[in-house]
Image (tube, rainbow, N blue to C red; front, side):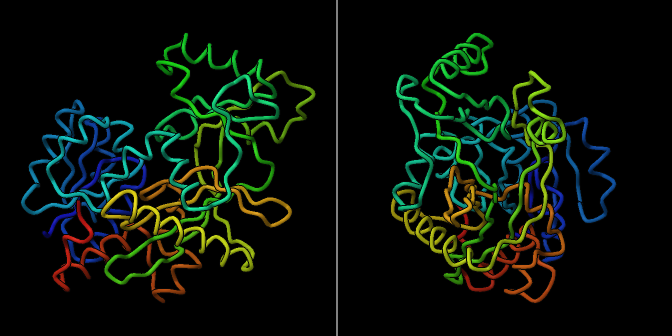
Amino acid sequence: MDTILTIGSHSSLQILHGAKKEGFKSIQITPENRVKFYSQFPFIDKVIGYNNEDEAVNLINNYVENGILIPHGSLVEYIGSERVKKIKTKIFGNRNLFEWEANQKKKMSLLKMSNIPTPMDFENPEDVDRMVIVKLPGAKGGKGYFIARNKAEVKEGLKKLVSTKIIDNEEDVIIQEYVIGVPMYFQFFYSPIMDRLEITGIDIRYETNVDGLKRIPFTDLEVEPTFVVVGNLPAVARESLLPKVFDYAMSFVNTVKEKVPPGMIGPFCLESVVKDSGEISVFEFSGRIVAGTNLYIYGSPYSWLYWDEPMSVGRRISREIKIAINEGKLNEVLT
């Protein structure tokens, strides 16, 4: 296996930059209208355009003998879960985790089984007795999410989502307590080869229009906040918070190993709110590389502490693959 490939979106630049740094061939498979953009980067050996998602799967499967596909948030969301099941090329990480991440209720169940503090959730809109956020399934980057102050607003919002065909039925969403605090997205990497959990960075997501509304008094506007992620900001946590969130991440790794074999492989993220009490409430997880890691192409303050050299998560993935190849354990990081 000498080739790393990925889909042209999300975090593909750092993935392929890291692959090249670790001595692999790098292949970008991307929508045809993005070929010119990605072709300008010298660390990408080959850029291949596709016109539809079925063609993308066929192109990926051309590398079944010598390629490793690195998944990111756009893979299932834009290629589609049914098509992803047709991918024969080996994937770095646990592909069995995709369906858990795509289902909000299954996603939260893994966190709860890990004994990680999570916001209260509501199965029935009738039970809502506080401010909540209603979330859609999949890696939609916050698109379609809405805040509701009471059960009447929840019902109204759900009807709108169904009528506009954003969701098929109201059961597809999760209704979750809106926790007040500072959002912090804690990025981790679990190495089955080294049996080591690393914290690789922290980010805050920059969302429109909720972050734009901060500049204008809410009382002067009748605009509902939305949560579409358009960028990320770097963050460093108080050091006293790190042992706590590290324990949560280790508990999550152990739960995934038990419930979703072969377990956690590589990058993941615990998406959290830190309250003024110091309590950390984890409202979601991402079971693969997150776009917030793009902040740290030359390493985060945390990754330097492990490697003492520039180490993006993209490069960390390829480093893990290289270590696995050298130790004859490649099958332990691929599915």
